[in-house]
Length: 259
Ligand SMILES: O=C(O)c1cc(=O)[nH]c(=O)n1[C@@H]1O[C@H](COP(=O)(O)O)[C@@H](O)[C@H]1O
Image (cartoon, rainbow, N blue to C red):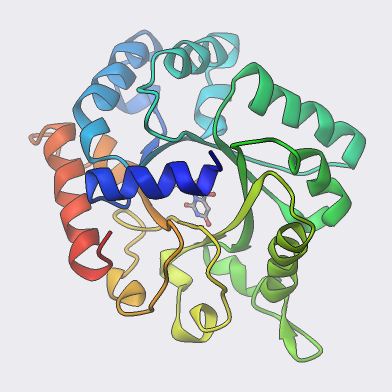
């Protein structure tokens, strides 16, 4: 089964496009030793509303070796039917990327990873022949600085449209790996979305970053797009359970962008 099929099935089964972001912060959680139980609780309470989970490497790396162990332990105990997108945003020459691909797709066996496409197509290639896997390339990120490069024009096209060419090329070449894009909800204007093809989108920026779900309404897309909430579930409204918050966001998303 291709990644896109697995994610589409999960979105249909749960009626949810919510991607639950797993970004643990020891300073806000009573210390590093509390993190493994916290992650278990978040996963246990939210998985029924989750189209996907997205752990971000930065938060685990910041805890040192123990953080990587926590990530590995968590990955080993995740529900198998929920795709895992490892947010790594890696970028290097092809030879080095081979080892990132091996690390994520073979060692940790995650379903998808985020990659930075700045170094070009050949640096994506080590990720493109993995059955059932996917990459999401950064196209229009959710931060203001996405205007610095990504939304600049080269000739008559935006830079993010050149990024999209990576998806088109991989698709035309019939690669085993699915290729989607990251498009931040905060910058998902009509001008941007009208230029984005029907490839799977990872859409962060809902909740803490204030992205507007109306941006995604009525766009006629059929790809298994998933919308990420991290802090809005793990670190907001702590009087509510993680499950309640995940349900809330899944319903908010469905109201504007039905599964
Ligand atoms: O690739 C990402 O997931 C990502 C891309 C982007 O453009 N903006 C963005 O916020 N992210 C990540 O998505 C998550 C957003 O977290 P919250 O703002 O707490 O919901 C973090 O892990 C970010 O690193």
